[in-house]
Length: 404
Image: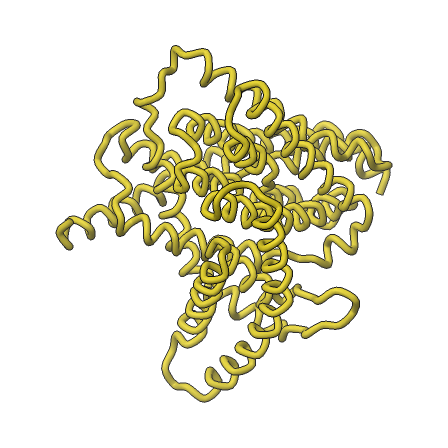
């Protein structure tokens, strides 16, 4: 590809992603839906102007690593401790049940292989904490009782999801599903999450000292991106997906991070806030490219829409995706309006679900039809939840206020 052609394609991708994201937000939908739709429009599904060429896929890889960095940066384990056992129950049921339902449907009903079924079930475990937090904030319910349970459960879902993603990655590149491969990944993840905060804390002290002495602007984003990329390289070198390194770096540098059992390296609040602020523009530049590439990789023209498979597969997984998250709150002692809201808030798969699906596609595990079905389920759950939450709060606002 000629350099000037690459510049033109990148320009079109960035501007189209922004335009569709703005339209989505104005229609009260998550911006990620707009960015995904931009890829569908530009790609082989509709206009056929752009294909996911190597240079843009590389930028999308950087985007996905920075996206997981942002998820880690926004992860607040204290929310889980504050909400206590209720968050734990909601998260564990909401993680295990969709995994079992998705795997069972794929393996026993549709007859897919063990690895494909695990990827399908794994994708259904995801919860988009970003979309959930945005809706709660818009409704000014993030500090409510049910809001604390939701945020705590979403945090645990994120952590469990990243560990599962690392396992699936190892299964896809390491020769199949074996106890040896699983044990190796779990051991690595445990070591990585223990060592990453210590090394990140030491590096942040070093960065602060240099930043106070330098007269050249831009030191913080340069060094933080370098740190994230180093963690991503280290994770890949040790046999896990690079995005795990991005998540660990974000978690370690988060101002909300703490180590269990009361022993912790407390981060400097003001410096952590500065990191978040200065990294925002870089994260928001690269992450839309990832979502556009997801849309570009989807060829809806190759799908036989008259086939019963795509409809039965999508509908079955959609029911499993919604029911699997709604059941969890039934096991906690809360008023039924709160239970419905908590379950609904856990439904959106958003960017986390797309990461699972894209990893399966890149590993040549998910075919185009399966990938399309997964994207449909992710998109519908992502659109469904914000509108449903707002309607539930509108209907039950008086009952919720009377219980607080």
